[in-house]
Image (cartoon, rainbow over all chains, first blue to last red; front, top):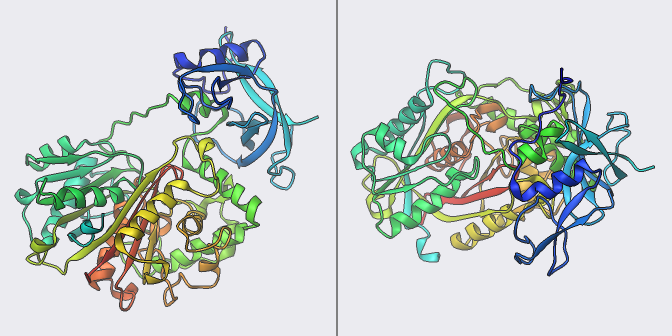
Length: 140
Length: 381
C-alpha cells in the first residue's frame, strides 16, 4: 500500500514545466533562464517575461536565497493538505532573482523567531516516485 | 480619454432583495434580483437593457438569457473582484460610442452557501507552484504582501486592527451590514489566529449577495428616476496572478496604473475627494491601496485610520458602507463599493451620509492586488 500523502500533488503538471519537475526528482532546483537577456524567471514558460525572447533555456539554481515574506498558518484551508498546523507558508527569493512559494521547515512556527530576509536554503522532499518538491530551511 | 469624462452616468444601483446568509437563493436569482432592483431604481425597464456586463460563474450570455433579453454588447472581463469597477470604464466607452444605450453591470455570488454553483478553477499555476505547500484561499496569499509591508515600513498588527475598527464603526450606521456592534483594537488582536499576520477580524466576511449598476449616456440620464451620478474618470491595470510575481511588493503597480489613469481622465487630484471606497478583503488592503494610489507615502497609509480621518465624522470618510470586513463580501466584492458611492452622491445614506459629497473615489483589487479598477464619480459635471 502507498503511504498516505500529506500534500496535494501538483496538478496538472504542464509540459513546459517538465525540466523543473525532472530536476527536482534528481535533487536539482532548475530555473528557466533567458538565453538572450540572461535573466532567470519563475514560473516556467516558453517566453522570457523580461525581454520577451523565445530563446529560453534552463539553469541549476544554487538553492540559496532569502525569506522574502512568510505567513504562519494556524489551520489548513485545503483538506488535501494534512500536515498539522501551525506551519510556515514561505515566499523565497532565490539568489538568481526569482521568487517562489514553499514552506519553511526545521524552524519553530513563531513570528518572533522567523524574520523576513533571513537566509534560507533548499531541501528536497520526495512525495512519490514522480514528484519531489523544494522546501526551505534556515541556512546552515 | 478626456471626452469620455462625464459622458455617461450611473442611473440605477441596488443589491439583491437580501444579502447575507441565503441558502435558499441561487446564484442566478441573486443576479436577477439585483438587476431588477437596479433597473427599477433607474426608472427603466429590463427591456431597455442592451449591454450586459458580468464576471464570475455566469457569462454575460447566460445572464442575458436569464433576464430574457438579447444584448448587442457584452463584456465578461474576469480578473477578480474589481472586474465590476473596470466594467464601469468599459461601459462608458461602449455607451459613449453608441455600441449600446443602457448598460447593466451585474454581480451575483452564493459565496457562503454555494447555492446553484458549480465551481471550476484554473489550477495550472497554483496547482503546481502553490497548493503543494498548503496555499489556497486569499488569506494565505494577502498576508505575504502584508508581512512584507510590516518588514519594510514598520507597520504593526495594531495598525491593521484600527482599519477593522474604523470600518466597523461605519457598519454600525448601515442597517444592511452583517456585523454592526462596535469593536476595539483589542477585540481584533484577540480574535482567533488564522493566518499570521491575520486574525479573524482582519479578514472579510463570506456572504451570499448580488448587486447591479445601470448606466446610460448623460443626456438620457437626465430622464431617469434619480439624480445622475457621472463617471468622471475610470482606470484599470493588471500585473500578475501569482503573488510571487508582484515585482514591487508591497507596492501595487496595477493599482498605481489604474489610479493614475482614472485621476487623469477625471482631471482631479488627491485633495479633491470627499469620500473613498477601497476594496477591503483584508484590513491591510485599504492603507496599502492609499499608498499605491499616491494618497500617502509608503508606510503612511495607516495614518488615515489611526488619526480617525477615515471614521464617521472624520475628514476623509473611508468605506462608509462597513466594507467587506463588516457589511458584506460575497467573494467578488467590487460591485458594492460602487453602489455605496452612488448612494453617497445621491444623499441616500441616512445615518452614515457624508455631508456635501461631490467627488467619490472607488478603487478595487482583483486577486492579490493583481489587478485594479478605479473610478471617480460625481453628481456634478
